[in-house]
Image (cartoon, rainbow, N blue to C red; front, side):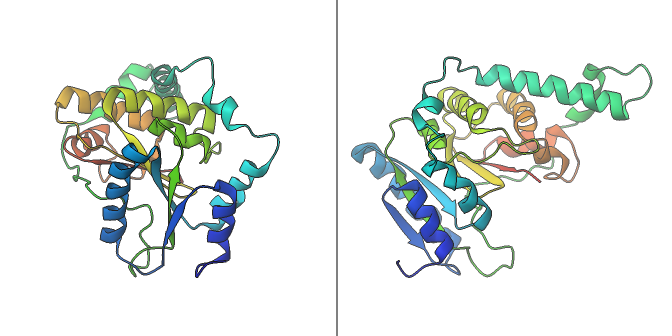
Length: 253
């Protein structure tokens, strides 16, 4: 084993791709720089880089990659690639549930969504990946940069099948959404822990109407992005963040 933790070695053994390990305590700037360089190099060498936090829970989940019951090909060769429809259905369901549980008498799902929109204000621009940043403030957690042998960035989900709990989409739904977001907006799945997923965009969204549409999709993909990831509890704050940001951040409680 290299000069890193048992958990990191377990993740390396599960993913089985070329890798580089960044030790705990290092700088997030160096990890971001290495990721961006690998993204450019990968286009020439035939891989897509991802950053994976050395995480006991994620390591346990990734054991499925060694299980004969799991097939990357099955995840990649789905018959329906309806990522946008999945997001629309989720959004309608969340609005209906919210209206039933908290809405005033006679309020509809449409009324609830209107209330949740708010104004496009209060969002902070995000330009650096941070899933690997230590909550203690002491640099980064031990992190692995993998070179995944795929052509399309959304295909990395087959190698990193996190999710399938609470409101976090399972690998099947997640890969469909990731394909839709990549083909439509250029969003690349970039950094993973057991409860965080970040996307990287080389060309951030600048159009306000597109930012509003995406903010609703982000809420549909991860309700906690609004419910616990904003100060206002409004979708408009996420729209403001999306506009001009090169990183999309999702965290599921």
